[in-house]
Length: 107
Length: 119
Image (cartoon, rainbow over all chains, first blue to last red; front, side):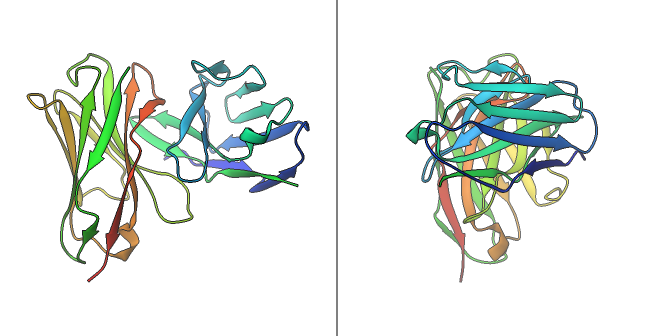
């Protein structure tokens, strides 16, 4: 089973700042890595798939990069609605796993 | 646009079986390349994948739950279901149904339903 480790656990930033979130896989997942955003009381929302492709309707300030075992989600300039928890996710050998999440909170 | 809606009891007793259904609208559950899944989230914790099922009935489960979990599809009702047996308090969570369309990421999610395990 591939384990996804996200860092940091919490990121304290101000609106307008740049957010950089990391997701590391215990073995290569090629580029089969997705990112989700979850706000309190809501279901997760797909942001990025295939490591770097934005899902429909996702603002351009969200970008993803990486391949193999190291991946990054970048929010170029935080908007008030971007403060949320972010999860990475992969599928390998018909097993899906999620990272433990990064909480992006207002500083 | 696909819409998913979970339904089922909000309270289950320890040792009993948790049963949930996900109703699919805006599309057919028999669509090719669509994998229908369940994910759960214990209170104040992260997401845990439970399993995915294809309309044909082929299913894949989280190894940590294997032996307790069963998923099924009802194409006539355009819905799929989850059964989790021998539940304990550790199974208390919000349960989401979701769909993978042709890839591996969950494109659409239900709103989630809270299931508490308590006597």
